[in-house]
Image 1 (cartoon, one colour):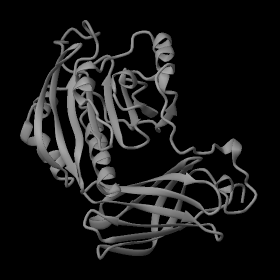
Image 2 (image 1 turned 120 degrees about the horizontal axis):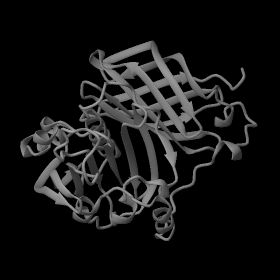
Image 3 (image 1 turned 30 degrees about the vertical axis):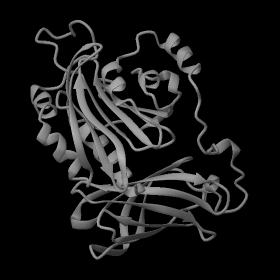
Image 4 (image 1 turned 90 degrees about the vertical axis):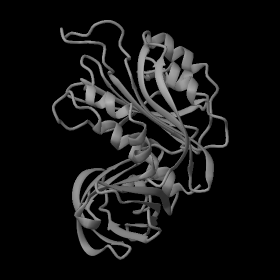
Length: 337
């Protein structure tokens, strides 16, 4: 299994999940924010047989659309959900989720081989529609994927035309060594009623220790190339980028958004596609090291590693979905410089 194809699946699943909501205005989502696992809106931590090691939230329209993203087993998998608490998804979305051919096409377009599919027709809360499947990604043939919708809220919502349509859509992927009971998750996922009691229940779950990441409070900030000295926040810069034989630009405009744990880069990439690159710090000690992945809206994606050198250059190297080399260099300003 290659990390490139794992990342590609995660990106495809999450992007399609968020694109599926058609019942609210097309306003932008808030930034993803990491929150304690006990604050989970859905009960994924207790119905997943793989430990949840990270939880992130974002929302849209003042919380009308609520998204969650759970990391499984320190990155061996992800579960992502979109929930509309006072409305529901369209019948078209339900029809698309019920279409096995479309389910297969969604993942096979990301070079994921599906061996067998299983329909999802109900969960503990009643109505559900979609599929889960056994799949192979790269050299790993023991992967699980799912995309389904279900009715999470009991009873009638605030509008008179509520006929009990699905109000939550979930994407799942996992490629790890431990056995993942995806049937338990798809059947048992539900909203958390008592947040305090649930937080206490999560605190009693077995913990899986992942490689630690330092916070800004523990960063030394002595050398200039320490990540603690990098200017955080959002600003515009240019990068030097080469993407196989598709693109080479020494002064490519990019929008930078950096935080303590990494950040994002947005630019116009191959085929004039809009591309977003996620940066994740794995090692804060000099030289800073991390991983990155890019996802473009016309289907291209790439991933690799990066370092931050003594000249304050963020240098990334990796490959795309066609195994072509991708490299970039971005000079980052010093905090308060």
